[in-house]
Structure formats: structure tokens, C-alpha cells
Amino acid sequence: MSPFLPGLVHTPATPFTPGRETDFDLYAKLIEFHLRHGAECLALPMHAGESVSLSDEEQRAMFGLAVRQVKGRVPVIAHVERFGHGHRRGPRALRRGVGRRRRRRDHALLLTPPPAMG
Image (cartoon, rainbow, N blue to C red; front, side, top):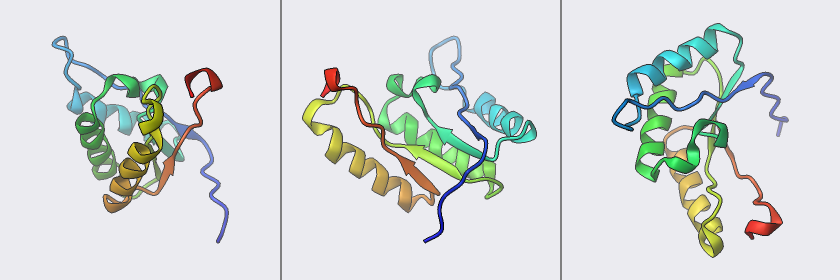
């Protein structure tokens, strides 16, 4: 297996409408902005991009949009963990990761929670 060396990884922030809905049209434009400005890989949604504020359904919609928008131009890393879910973190992350694989994500990212949150 060859090592995964993604280069410059960008993490687009999640845009919201004034009504606090995810702004998918603006998100598609943000993805293009990142690609035009040197992103060699995208990781989403990360904590810098409001991942903890999004439901699983919203995250799935964002992943789907990102993969369609990228069209294979760069790898897409799916962030599958969510801090603060106690003992359910592992199984939930595994389900989310398997779902990402079915939707053709290139890689999955699972962060280890800080000891205080374990």
C-alpha cells in the first residue's frame, strides 16, 4: 500500500443562511474557491467548519455535494467523529465511516477525543 500524502489540505467553513440552514449553493462556490487557490485535498466537515453543529443528515448532504463538486480533481477526506457522544463514539464513527466509503470518499478521519472528554 502506498502512503497517503495529500499535500495542502483545505477545510472549507460551513456557510449558513440567515435562517440558520446550511447554504449549499455558497458551499459549492467555497469548494471551487479552495480548488482555485491551491487545495490539493479537502477535509470536511472539520471542527473549524462547524461539524459539531450539523446533524448526520446535513453532514451527509455536505459530503455528497463536495464529492459531486470536486469531480475527482482532488481527494476528499470525510471527518467521521463527533466529540461528546460518550461510549457511542466508536460505533457511530464506524457507521459514518462505512457510509462515507459507500459514497466514494477517498479517506476517513477519526480524531481521538481529549482525555477529559473520554
